[in-house]
Length: 242
Ligand SMILES: C[S@@+](CC[C@H](N)C(=O)[O-])C[C@H]1O[C@@H](n2cnc3c(N)ncnc32)[C@H](O)[C@@H]1O
Image 1 (cartoon, rainbow, N blue to C red):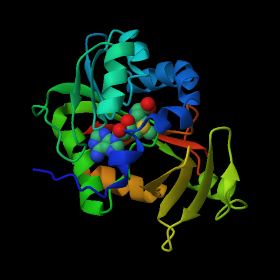
Image 2 (cartoon, rainbow, N blue to C red; image 1 turned 180 degrees about the vertical axis):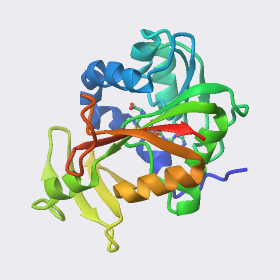
Image 3 (tube, rainbow, N blue to C red; image 1 turned 90 degrees about the vertical axis):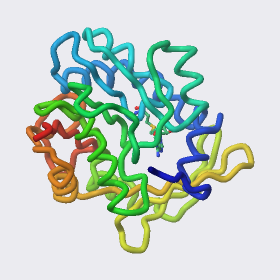
C-alpha cells in the first residue's frame, strides 16, 4: 500500500491549470510523438497497452489508430477530467508506485515524456518499474521515453540558476548538489511550483530496468528511431519483460 505524502511535489504541480498553460506545446507535439512511440511499441493490433502516466490522454488517439486497446492511468484528477472530455476511454486514478492492475494483464506499457524519476528514493522509482513489469505478460514491451542527460546538461549549462522569462511564467533550473536531480522552479500567475526529477545516466537506466525485471532490447536517440547515442536529446528504451 502506498501513501501519497502531502509535500510530494508532483501532487500539486500537475494537478493545476497552470500545468496546461506551461505545457500547451505538448498538444501539437502529440502528432509526432504518438505515432513514433506507437511504432516503437511495435505490438499487433488488439494488444492492450497501459498509458502510464497518461496525463490528459494526448497520446491515446495515436495508439488507438494502431488498433491498440488503451487503458490510461494518472494521479491527477484534473488531467483525468480533461482526458475523459477530450479523449474518452478507460482510465484509472492511480499512483505509479502501487498500480491497481492484475498481474500479466497487458502486452505493452507506454511511459512517455520523462514520466520517471519523480520519486525521492531509488526504492520508489524501482517500484514504478516493477509495477510495470508485474502488469506485463512475459515478453511484454515497455517503452520508456526519457530526456537525454548529457544533452540536458549541455543545454542548461549557461542558464543554471537564472530566472528566465517565458510567455506565461518565469523559470529557474538548478541541479541538486549531488548532480543527480533537476530542480525546476516556476512562478506561474503568482503561484510557485517546483519539479524535482532524477535524471539518470544511461547506465543507471539500464541497471534499474534490469533490477525491475526487464531486458533492454533496443534504445533510440529520439522519435525518428535512430540508434541511441549519448548526446541525444531523448533516450527511448524498448525493454522486454523477462
Ligand atoms: C510530464 S506528464 C506526462 C504525461 C503523459 N505521459 C504525456 O506524455 O502527456 C507527467 C504525468 O505524471 C503524472 N504523475 C505524476 N506523479 C504521479 C504519480 N505518483 N502517480 C501517477 N501519476 C503521476 C502527472 O499527473 C502527469 O500527468
